[in-house]
Image (tube, rainbow, N blue to C red):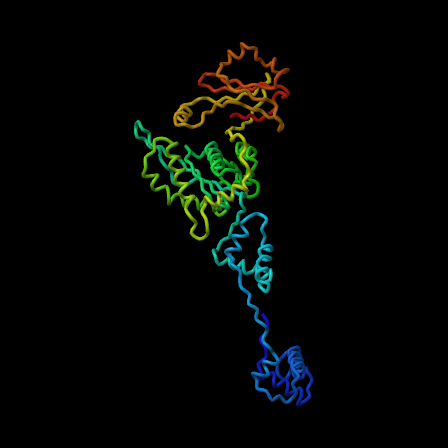
Length: 433
């Protein structure tokens, strides 16, 4: 902090001791209890003013001559709310570029350092938390809502709880929601696919919660993702960056979206009766369209209008949507087969009646050492006996086509993949969809 200027009483005393008694600067500094540099500055200003001793001016006039007031520049502060909106308009916008645009309209305005300091104070006054600015098409945040909705059985009136998947884009704040039977991996990825098709494109990254179905092993720096989730990210060419554990601010957009839906849509949806999940999703879609079309309170436009702008920055969707698949490790048997068996239990039969995905699939793929070693063959519904009658044996497949899939018609779903090139007793990844 700069030291306060000497009062005029001491300044007149310095001039008197210098011109009337002829003392040196050091002696004057000791006499008036001031620094030598202060005394020298006072004498220099008096010599530059053109005055002579003794001074006939009063104290106010002498102070105006020795210490003239600096020219006050009218520095109009920029509209920092507009600056924040400008910074989030697209990825390449920087504070320096916004400051240059500000100086074009205010040539004598704030310097760059003062501009950044004032903008930082503006952000601090807004809220005691970090502001998150997302460029268009940069991120999508996903989560499940806390309260559950219900589907009523038309025969016995039993109500079944279903969960609501919610997604929100970072720039436009556009919201999507759909009901799923649960929060398993297949439900998470089904919600992802529907959200991407609703938004009309793929963002650069997806920020999910640390649910066990997506992130089996959480870590601050290197979380372990579900292999099916990795397969989904490769299909849509996007990155997956899970939020930190117990840090909801990492996905504040979707947390806010969940709160909006719980207040705006859930009361009327809980009061209504739905007999299937399709009718519930249809009502959810109508409510989401109303929420997205509602104008913002503190800025122009709505979520829908901002979504139309953000779609230009989203990557295009692939030709075919993602098909859920599970990855398992299997051992290569002595007959060059990789088999995956799933027993049909009472629990599986009840889940199948409820509409959950069955364990069996339509195709299978095998990878060994990261390379695809066998092709796929759709299920034809024929039993293993009919397949054997056609001469499909392990000996034939060793020297001809790379692979095949069989599925029995019994209650036990049995998928067998024949292949060549694998050494026996080695490990391979088995993908079933």
